[in-house]
Amino acid sequence: MFKKRQIGNTNLKVTELGFGAATFGNLYRPMADEDAQLSIKKAIDLGLNQFDTAPFYGFGLSERRVGNALREYDSNDFVLSTKVGRILEPCAKAEDKYGFCSPMPFEPKYDYSYDGIMRSFEHSIQRLGLSKIDILYMHDIGRVTHGDDHDRLFKIAMEGGYRAMDELRSQGLVSAIGLGVNEYEVCEQAMDHGYFDCFLLAGRYTLLEQKAIESFLPRCLKENSSIVLGGPYNSGILATGVKRDGVIPHYNYEPASKDIINKVAKIEGICEEYNVPLAAAALQFPLAHPSVVSVIPGLSSANRVETTALQMQYDIPSDFWSALQRSGLLSPDAPVPTDK
Image 1 (tube, helix red, strand yellow):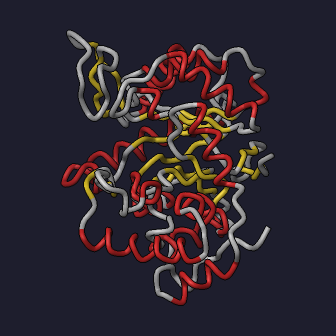
Image 2 (image 1 turned 180 degrees about the vertical axis):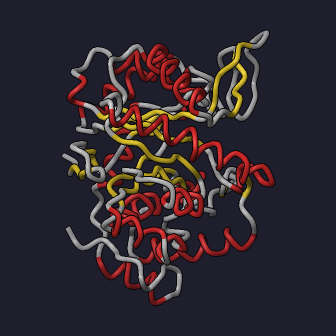
């Protein structure tokens, strides 16, 4: 049902629609174990093969749920990614924090050192209860995340953390390595220190913003590093739109500014003119760029998986994309999907 694209120089091929499992960590609201199980079953039944999790998501809860759901399937039938860069330290009790509702009783601590990366990888293997991890991302390194501490942590990450990840790749314990971040600038910075097969870039090349096309995406093409596009809805605003009563549009994990709301309202207006669902346009747009191999929205239920799969296949006319570019709402340099 979904085309597969190759990750960098690896033998891994991922479906154009992937499965983001941050919601499995009870992100913003609790979910039942059964719902997690059923949503992954639905995804596999529909042909999805890429599943992404992280220790940070519910402090181990997402990894446990993903592992439990995938364990019954042949490991050759899915591509699994998780992340390193934090160690989970036991705490007194589980409590709501960092947006996760009653997660497991651990406190995440940043650790980008060689030993920290190796420990995190080993811990993830145990939590997942699976024999392999295909893609390992270094999580949330970057200046926006760490502010004045970025230079110190980045040095540790490149001298120690990258060395650990490169060893895991060389030993065949993972097939690909990359960064899982919300800022493309740190990806470019990291590319000066080693080869990364792929980058899980959240929200920085979307229907709403395309600045990454100026230098980062062309460099990925030149060096054969693939982009897995997380956050295609920019934290929700490109899924909900801005016209629903009682819904506060969110952008970049917080209530959207007036300027962002105004821009999305204009995009919504063109969507209405061409009878195109906003969410469908948001999902399909990034895949037109040859460096982008997949989009992975957060999926929280079997119904959401099915709805998202339908949006990915929605027939969007080429005139719609032309209208966005004529209106200055989409970069004139951005490649757009062609008619199916």
